[in-house]
Structures are given as C-alpha cells and as structure tokens.
Image (cartoon, rainbow, N blue to C red; front, side, top):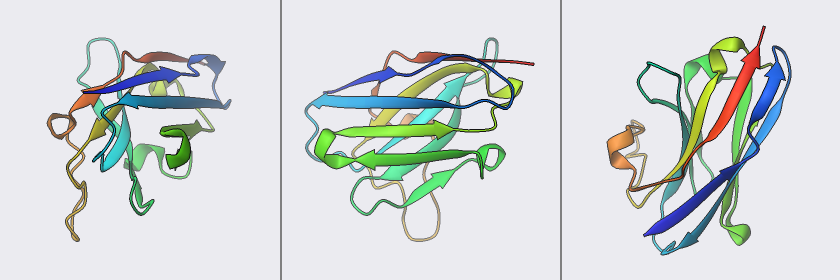
Length: 129
C-alpha cells in the first residue's frame, strides 16, 4: 500500500497562489502516475491534474489550464501542485492519489478516480472573493 500525505492548503484571496505537496511512502515501487483531485462540499470529486512519473508527461483539467502546474521529484517520491490565479470555484479539499496503471495509452488519458489505488487524507484549499 502506498501512503500519501498532502500539505500546503490554506485560505487565500482570489488571484492568489498556493503550492501543494504530496509525499509518498510505503510500497511505492511500480507507481506509474500520481495526481490531484478535489472535492467541494456537496459536489462530486473531480480530477485536477496527473503526471506520469516515468516520463514527466502531464495533463490538467481544462478549467485549471494555464493556472495550475503539476510537477514531480522522483528522488523525493513527491508531487506538487502550483496553483496561481486562484478563483473561488477552486475551493475544496484537494487529494493526492497514486496509481500503478499507465494513465496514457497513446491517445487518451485515464484520469478517473476509480483507476487510482491510493489516496491521501486531503488538504483544504479555500479561496475567498
């Protein structure tokens, strides 16, 4: 089992920035990709970004393109999410996730929550207007 711990959440006003971190430990061998999901109160958990740990290829949901950037540091078994130009609609609990399944088959990205095996406890991000 892969253990994931998120950090870096907080309260920020619209237009501000936050940087999230996710540290992985445990049975990390074979992990193909890690990503971020978020969930607002009363809403479904939604995909934010994913990165292939083997080649660094990344994919971000449309609503955060140009504002959020996912990155990885394999030596530290960590992934990060730099969030700029935050909007109130970005508010939610942000979860780090890991999967041993290749997230890209050459034509499409598999970024559905059910494909991710391990999850962190989440970190709250609140963006005020």
